Image 1 (cartoon, rainbow, N blue to C red):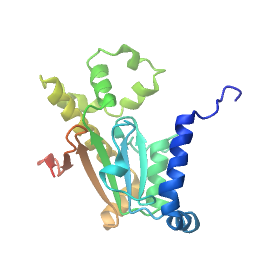
Image 2: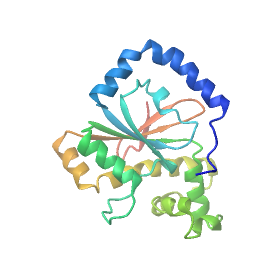
Image 3: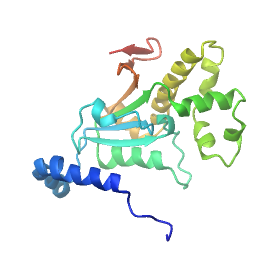
Length: 216
């Protein structure tokens, strides 16, 4: 741990500014969250991409959403094999402990993870094929959907369709978790798929296999 460095002044200044303004103005609310615990109404599974500001998109207050982010907003299938599963653990906690009423999978335009999957499937990214690539093995979750977009000639359209397929894949895989399926069937949990354009801030919602994504 001797290589750990002190936090750069930029971060300290941003923290101090937040503490002096936002925190001070809402101190009672923060203390209430600390004392009473979290009661988020929804879980949002989004991409790690720094351009996707989940809290800003939905105007979220602290404590309102349980947010999990990973490469390409993917949910793996239910695999109780005793190994490390960060996303699956987050889903389990959100559903079984926090009892969220909604799970929202939020994809976005210009997704680097989705682009990487396309490149890998097309044979143009051998580094992702290497078994030691964490990114490549994670993107294997999306690999089966390449057949859906493989023949789309326009690169931009192909990327958009694959971004949508990443959302659909996650929704399908969520239903492979028994505790998710049980609550969905009971009506106490609903799943939602959204795609946002980071350039024009438009939002589209998955409305089923027949309608696909419909702009909101």
